[in-house]
Length: 362
Image 1 (cartoon, rainbow, N blue to C red):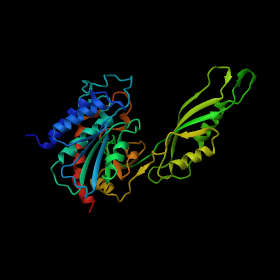
Image 2 (image 1 turned 135 degrees about the horizontal axis):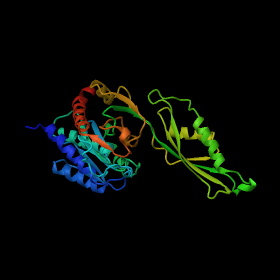
Image 3 (image 1 turned 120 degrees about the vertical axis):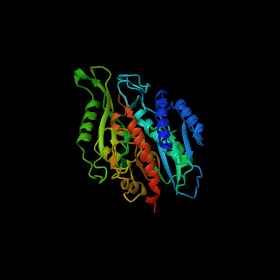
Image 4 (image 1 turned 30 degrees about the vertical axis):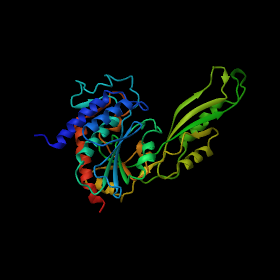
């Protein structure tokens, strides 16, 4: 006779397959959100919907108690044209034991395993509340994903969070932030043959060289150095005209050693180009070693680390860890997949974590 956990695992695997079959790029998640909402209601779980986001509160929710939130996102990046198989077909004969396709690893595995763990504790007494948050628009830092539900509903309810992302079920206790800089170098247009004008491309190249060689003085004990990469550049219209404008994009991954505005100001101090941050809200995140989240993870032998990638963690305002099934190295690439054993192991780990979490609060 199958146990409840075994049934939950099989239902999670089937749900993940069903999710993969429904395209759900950022800003177009309605169909997969509807399917998940219908499945949860069919299982007897009460839901609240805000746009394409879904929020579930544990039965017996008591606002006087602290609350642990589990959050994962349902949107995906666009499918790579390099896929060797249909990115919306989860069962591939060449990959037995795997659930394949777009979103299987990032972030469907976290979604369905968190749902299974949440359902396991329905009706089971805990000393704290559980909230399940299923979010949209994570891949494109949208305004109508976790940022919307946090501001409208969750801010005053959530004490701690587990953010589901593919970490091989290691617990990230910190993650870098993100600053995207749109940069403009301005020169003077001129005829290339007569060596007229001021070449904006050369100004940009000098600034890019300075950015590459710059060392930020403060190094985070948890995250190390600030990471900076120039990722795009555009200049010129025709071969014989000195360009008066060159634009380039810089990807900055801050640490907790710096305020985002401080980083931009330091870079602007040695660049002639104008550096315009798209926003300064995506700060780095770090949870203290004495947090019950970190204590619980370590008591269970879960490896902790600092994550180089961002997630919905940057959009919430409470202590958190990032932990989910799968491997970040598979994300945003062709032939994405999640092993069934990874999915089943994640469900076991989430259940153990929640079972033991109350001990970390004492």
